[in-house]
Length: 230
Image (cartoon, rainbow, N blue to C red; front, side, top):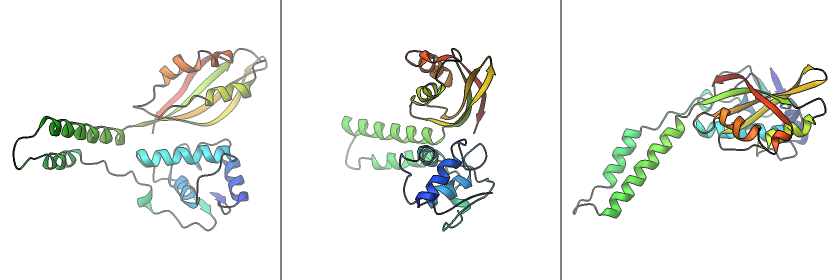
């Protein structure tokens, strides 16, 4: 069981930042109620001084806005924080698109005559907005482990990782990483990321961003080691 001091103090934030140095989540390999316990114990987002804690906070915040997190967890204790209720971590129910569409139709009924072209266009735009919102809530997520190999043993692996993490796009969240020896003094970067399936294609990201200029100055090749639905 993980335990943290008051997370609204410098010492508490420092311990959280160190804990997340080699982890994507508080416990386990996917977001759980343990992450929510810590998330709700923070009075405000960690500053950029705590880079790992800040990255984790933004990731959990995004997951909660998309579709919630798992109710499972190994257990975590935060001083001065109340336990998180199960309702706080359950996946929110999807909007009933039929009811929403019916409400929109009721709003668009002209009791005194036929709809104008402007009214019809506005109704179509509202219906499309409801459909897009429902689709976003139903988007799945995946956890991906990627091997990134340098050109040789003289490649600056710190700059390589910085170049990889510089790739930012909607639905992409970089996680923990480590260097793994492959022989002859060469090490590869093994890095985790979480993606929203409808927004990010890992194959396309590798072909169009990870192996092209300027990142290919450091990267020789990339391989997907594991791809798991969350």
